[in-house]
Length: 330
Image 1: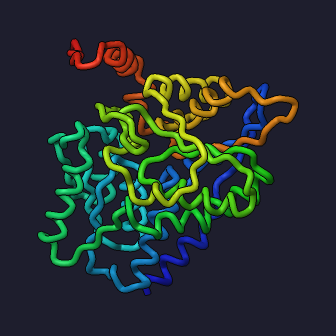
Image 2: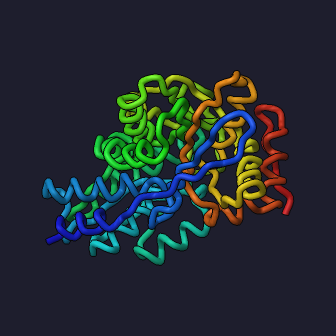
């Protein structure tokens, strides 16, 4: 049966490692979520959402799963749907990395790619509109709706957080990148149940509107949003750190140079937030225990975050005055 196969896959997952990073001020540990089979923390929510939907009878072998994603959640769904023999159609946009898009086409065949920006200058609303069209067009379709599905939150409450608590011991701070809100919603509740004094820091990117910032063009997928996700409102957040994409790139470079961690843009943003936060709030005699989520690996970013030409253009665009459009020279 499909449900038994799903449970079998989940039982076979052994968790992700926690590693210490040398730091002068804090005891910093990184939860390497990019060691999940599909390469990101989205494995957790993708598999649990599928398992729960199958258990409720919302997904059968005849169902096509349809979802909007900037990359990582689509990869996770594509991977697990392939293992389960379920059809999957991702709806992506031009910010999706070329390597990710190629992998999606290899795993599933059909990929829907929108190209028109929405009113916020992003592609999210355009992607979501295409999802709604596909739900009508396809005979039997299921939309996971990662931005509002409580199963996404519960996956991180049940699994990611339990692992982190068992591995890390008492935590003073937890830094989590925010996109759909599912990861921080689940983690924050479970961690604060065990360590009520832990300070949960939400990490967002410039141009995202999640925490009230002005919308603007964003180039690095996997973090931020052009809407306020319902799941984010369920999180227990103490503080917010907003990180520029240039800082995220610099932090990715630091992670490779200092620790050999080849991480993605979301991870770089979160590590940059850790650095920036403790540059302003220097701890005293007590060395705080700090955990951050290394949510994605760097392979999909080889032609962006780790490409000197792309980074040069990113820096040039970031240096332009507001309202000035930068023209790339080929």
